[in-house]
Image 1 (cartoon, rainbow, N blue to C red):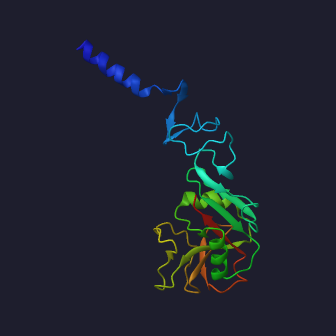
Image 2: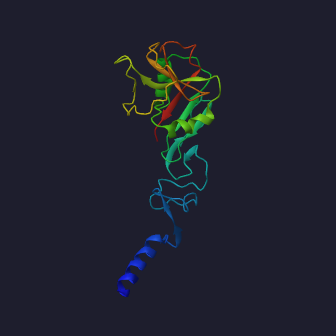
Image 3: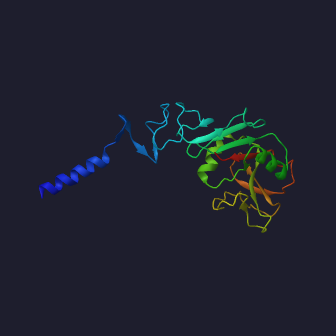
Length: 203
């Protein structure tokens, strides 16, 4: 009986102890070695490691590969956000009065698409970079079926933070209101209503 308890105790202790690899302490959390990332050496599950916490330089603070997400890479962009866990780059154009087709063309030229905000976490990542008074195009439409919006990328349209009374059928494209983070539908050609747009570039 005592031998069995000793085996169980040993197994529990081994599970709880952090792993050592190459003489460096590793504590794995959510698939990332948080204690080795940013040491300047690419190890194990890290996609990259440039030794810094800058998310915009092509290697994120969670050691995920991204694109260089900044003004020199995307001229015309006003703000830049990177999801450190996925490497996705978001380029916010906040002062360009374009139609959806024109905005889509700009995003395509940048190697991306109008942003698909598929979760509350993704929307929350962008919210601090938005400013009151802005309404930015995002990549959804109900042109194929009136009243049934879908992302242009084909991603699931489960997250839907529409403003009260929206969508109201006034248009076939969506803008995100910077002050509230809520969405409204409007005419895809109303360049004066949307004050800009958000491009999303995959790593």
